[in-house]
Each structure stands twice: as C-alpha cells, then as structure tokens.
Image (spheres, rainbow, N blue to C red):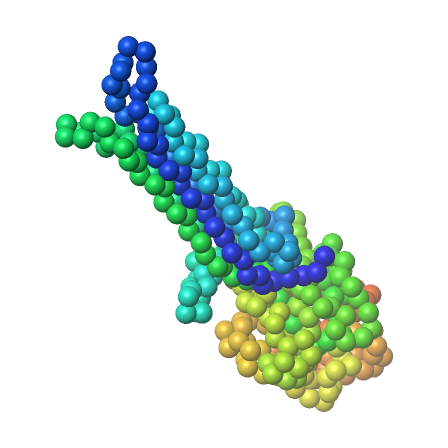
Length: 339
C-alpha cells in the first residue's frame, strides 16, 4: 500500500424526509382530521480517528461519501425513519480543512486521539406532517413541511504523523537501520540515497510500559526547500514531535569541521519550517564502524572540546546505541513533564 498523506473528498449529509399530508379515514369517522406524520432526519457525516489506519490511501479511490436520507412521514402520525449516520475513519493525526468557495481553506479539526469523532456535515431536519398545522381556523391543512436539505462540503484531509521523536539527516545516514535496532519497525534498508521514500514509525517501550514513538523521515539534501531530492514534503510528519535526533554518517562530515554537516541540514529545516528548526536536537554521528580505533579516539578527543554533546554510534553493530537511547528517554521524560 502506498503512503498517502493528503486527500480531497466530498461529503454529503442526508436530506430530511418530507412531512406527510394525510387525513384519518376510519369507519364511522366520515370527517377525520389530519394525521400526517413527520419525516425522518437525514443522516449525519462524522469523521473518526482510528489508530488502525496509517495512510489516507483509500480516499484516492473513493472521493464521494454520502449519508442516507430520512424517509418521508406516513399517515396515522407515523414518523419516517431517520437516515443512518455515516462514520468515516481516518488515521490519528489527520487535520480536516473545509475548502471554501473562494478556494481558501478553513481548519475544522485536528484529530489527534484514537476514537475522537467530529461532526463534519449535519443531516437535514425532517419536515413536519400536516397534523402540526391543524388549528381552530384551519381544520384540514392540505400541506406539510418539506425536509431540509443536507450539507455538502469539500474537505481536504492532511495527515501529520503522531510521533514523539523525529529522525532527520542526510540520505543514507543510517536512520532506518537505527530505528530497526531500537524498535520492531522493519523499514527498507539499502546502501544508496533515498532508500526510505515514506515515513517509517517505530515504537520503543521502557521498563514501565511507557511508549515513545519515533518517526524516520526520508533524508534531506541541500536545496530541499527548493524541491531538490524528495523536497520537504515529509517534514510535516515531525512537526508534532517533542524533539529531533539529527543523524549524520561519518562519511558525510568533515572530521576537522564536524558541525558543518549538521548546519547544512539545520539551514534546510529553517528554510522549510522555522518552528521545526527551533526544536531541541540530539546530535549523532553514525557508522563509526567504518573508522579505525585511532580515528575514533581522535574524534572523541575533538568532540570533548565542544559544549554540544555528539553521540558516536554504529547502528549496524549496535555500538553506542544503548547510550543514545538512554539520552532519548531522558529528554522524552523531561519534555513530557514540561509540556
């Protein structure tokens, strides 16, 4: 299944049923009064967040979603049946925008909790039967109220993955290997750029059963904010995160100017989303298995002169991964308590 994070659909609630024009026709009651019943209410359209869905892919195939109409009223003051409501399941983390006639959009709701529901289109009210219009001056009303039309809306669904931690970095930095080491996620891994073409999620649990959701975002490159490489289209999936883990491969950094590699990605983050660029980061150099012990010792000595902590790991063989994960949990606990 393809990862789809945007979709535009049309929703229609049900029309209310018409009220009934009817008169009593009973034996020995030659001039019975009005007894037309009310029409049923049209079905509502709800959106419901579901943790069972991970993508908006299904909405690419079905773009029109309609609730049932209410049934008309009947004689003997019998009410028409209300139309069944329509509940549309969407992934947790879906933002719902109404597309207005002028082309602008209005945010209706952000569905961030599993099971959260939102009434997106209200069904039309059923019309009143002629029994309601009887009066001392109108004993035989020969009219009833029509049912109200339902609502029709064009809405745009935008999925922003709910994750606590976002992994960012250049392509082929080893983010996918790292997430496969710390969670049950099994992303596609290969020794070439852009192996990861869609966001991957991994869930890590601590000894107390608490969960930390980590999102692996396809690699950025210089010029991503201008559409280079995969561009910045997936960065929205780390906008909700508490902090970022910034991973670079030792192959992609100048060991004499280590922070220049991190700065390259930070510039792209800033150009794409200043709010995202201001999130706290844990800095990581991966693939130290490619270095000799002498080179690793030299690198550690160089890093010790900086205030900013940089973790050295090999996601491939697990070296340093435990210490990095401990730091991630520590920051996760801290930021969870503060906000």
